[in-house]
Image (cartoon, helix red, strand yellow):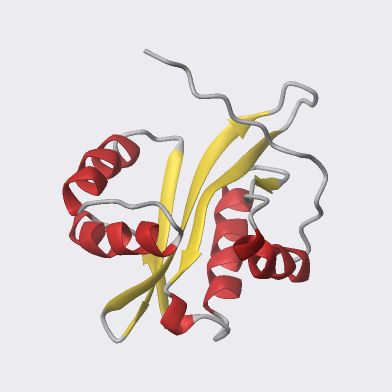
Length: 144
């Protein structure tokens, strides 16, 4: 297994992984999103690759605390191909995410995960990695 920074060539695999996460995404949609993400220096996308196939990804964002003087990373997407789960891929991606955060002087990593029943295994995975459930997230869509 190899963990590396994502490239434009990975866009079809990233679209597939977003589908795996429960977010229908066409390759064209992912291309538009990835181009914006890759051009923003506050974002960093890592992929896990096995024998040339992208099987997982973690997308990070460099954030600034309001309540502290330090900065932190936010995981905005974390997903493994369902055919490759429970093989240590997520743990390896998380270790690389933590290394990136440390290299950038960040003091914490935060993430949100939906409260849907199908996310319970992911919640247990995050706890095993040392994350604590400390808040409830809310979202409100703004109508155009």
